Amino acid sequence: MTSWFALLPALQTYDGSQTAPLFPPSASTVSGEVDALYAFLVGVSIFFSVLIFALVIGFTVRFRRRPGVHATPIEGSLPLELLWTLVPLAIAMVIFVWGAKVYFRTVRAPSDAMQIDVTGKQWMWKMQHPTGQREINDLHVPVGVPVKLRMISEDVIHSFYVPAFRIKRDVVPGRYSTTWFEATQPGEYHLFCAEYCGTKHSQMIGRVFALDPVEYQAWLAGAGAAETPREAGAKLFTSLRCDTCHNSQSGARGPDLAGRWGGKSVLRGGGSATFDADHVRESILNPGAKLALGYEPLMPSYSGQVGEEQLLALIAYIESLAAPQGAKEKP
Ligand code: HEC
Ligand SMILES: [Cu+2]
Image (cartoon, rainbow, N blue to C red; front, side, top):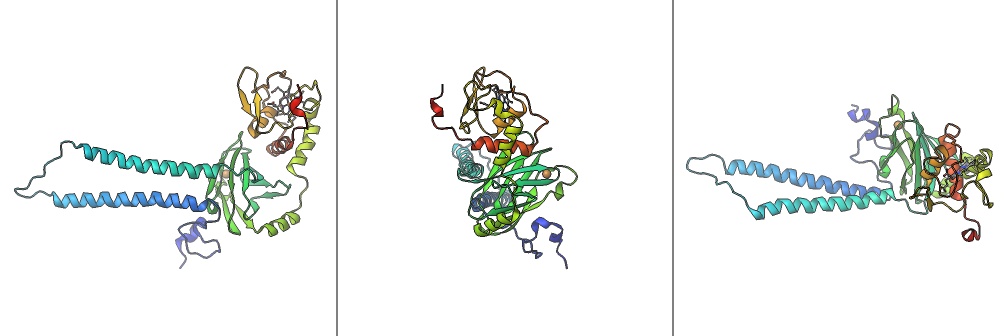
């Protein structure tokens, strides 16, 4: 007899047998923490469900109507009020602090993480490794290395979901979102789109292959890379003539972009913007939105001329530009 679970691919075991495990495999450094929090929430819910049902049934029996016996209603009790206010408050605070801890851990990638670019579109996932290799719907990663994903959508909202790593992050048009993981177990894991994105949403699925680092190197060598995002970005920077305005010469029409990554961009009219991927992207597509202080609004918009993957390449290049020696002394 085929199990009805066979209809639900997500519930099949990963070796293809038909038994349905309660949880997907636990294969990242955060998956244990997420599961512990989840178990706690389920435990609290079960405890109170049982307690409340037991009390309802117990009181119904104990205070049932009997001749000559009357229950006396309680007309207000400070200790009782305090009990059922403070106990739920304490439990809610535990859930809040614990949840926030786990959340921040899954959101903040370690600084030494290897970065992979992910572009979602109807209905596929496109990935590019820092060494240039491209993949569609498959993602090969090394075990034991933190991997950060910089993700954007070319059309509608998608969501990058790898149950075995307990990560799920929306991938939206117009703005970068990031997530990270560190695989702990070699294996093949499901990748799903977890945001309904049109007719073939259910087919927007892929596989993540967590490989032993040595095997990952072998895979990289075999996958063949044309050029790294950084190299592609450097070429674009010249071919799109960004370098005519952005260079380190004095009197350059645009600000020097070298060594700026992660710092602040002081804006005309007050305020500042963090010099990150979103700022660079906006500067390229809509330069007037945030004008750098001390410069004229000369930069043309490249909207419609560069696609998401080219933007990611330009960003990778600008991110890699270290400040030249002595640049800090420049007036
Ligand atoms: C005609 C000259 C010109 C060209 C060409 C040009 N820019 Fe600019 N760019 C500017 C000027 C002037 C500013 C400062 C005013 C502003 O923020 O728009 C600027 C600002 C920027 C900023 C924000 C800098 C900051 O300090 O916040 C980035 C990033 C940037 N440009 C990237 C690019 C890239 C990438 C290209 C090529 C695709 C490019 N620019 C092409 C003139 C130019
Ligand atoms: Cu999708």
